[in-house]
Amino acid sequence: MADPSTAAPAAIWVDAQADAPALFGLAPGERVARTLRRAGLAMVPVIRSEAGDGALSDRLARALEEANGPILAIEEGAATDPRLLSTLARGGGSRVARTEEGTALRLLPGTTLPPAADLPTLADALIAAGVSRLADQDFDGFIGVLRRDLPYWILRPRDVAAAERAERWMFFANYKGSTDILTSHVFPPLVWPITRWCAARGISPNAVTVLSILLTVLAAILFWQGQLAAGLLAAYAMAVLDSVDGKLARVTLSDSPLGNVLDHGLDIVHPPFWWLAWAHGLALLGGPDWLWPAAWAMTGVYIADRLVLMVAKARFGRGLHAMTRLDGQVRAFISRRNINLLILTVGLILGLDALAFALVVGWQMATFLWHGLRTAILYPRGRQMA
Image 1 (tube, rainbow, N blue to C red):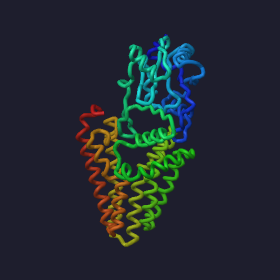
Image 2 (spheres, rainbow, N blue to C red):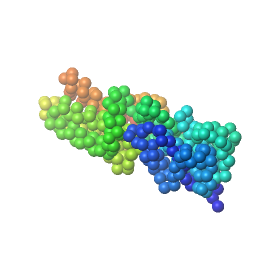
Image 3 (cartoon, rainbow, N blue to C red):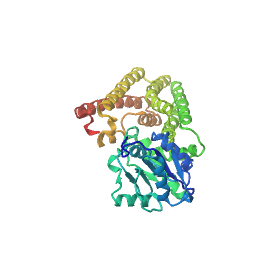
Image 4 (spheres, rainbow, N blue to C red):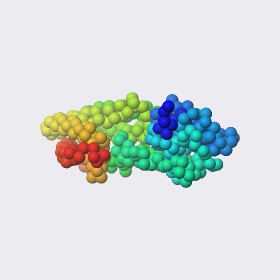
């Protein structure tokens, strides 16, 4: 017979709360379903319990008896971190996760539940009685795709104003820990309303990604034709939407393998085509003869730089820019798409197009050397720092 303290949950118990507002267009019940899918618990039976069915402790006790195994107890009105539910599902006895706004519990069969009007009160009583322990020590807060550590969260908005505050917190919590200055400081005032607008209308992240791809192609065509200013407008629009699709996917729990491939694949593949197209367009406008060789050199160095970053990630178990504070800080201005666009934009405005492109090429080479140096320095320590 399996040890119930380590067994997988036999049921998810959901404390139904009719007064809970929607978050990013998702009604509480739909958000719970998506959260469970993200946590890998989509196949676990869900017991939705309403206050009219009796006192909370009694309802939970009946669920424990019927489930014949551990259960996870959550609040329907709360947005609960899927990572937290995954942690609680992996076993480890009776555990409690508490934030200022909400609670999630893992309860074992046979547990005597003290009277409680809500889950937070029950959680505090179980901890005080020594029946449950906090799940904090079991939780790994590092998020690889965001290159940052983020403590688990449970948000329980009780009115529209609180829901908007919760949405804003969720939005900014899904920003990467290290990114370029445009993404972190310039784009958010645009990305925030666009993300909310898309979520409210049920627009999928993949639809936003497809539009990004179309803008990517349009920018390359305009660059190639020498319509540099128009190409930059398309490129910046693409860069903003590239930030929207990821945020939209995460706040609505609607990311997909296809979307991840399209989004991250686009980010990696398209920059060399833009810089080659820019060099061709600038040459059409009477640029110097060295533009093409410089563009091809940049393409080669860009590929080499990506390979170095792949080696670093394989060695360290996380991206190079998540290794130390220094590596995260330099991510703000090293050679990447948005930084290069900024340099080319300033050059175009000042009439120093060729000089700006030369600077972009040189900056890519300097970035490659920096990444190679940092990887070499940290390589002997392997995953010890992760």
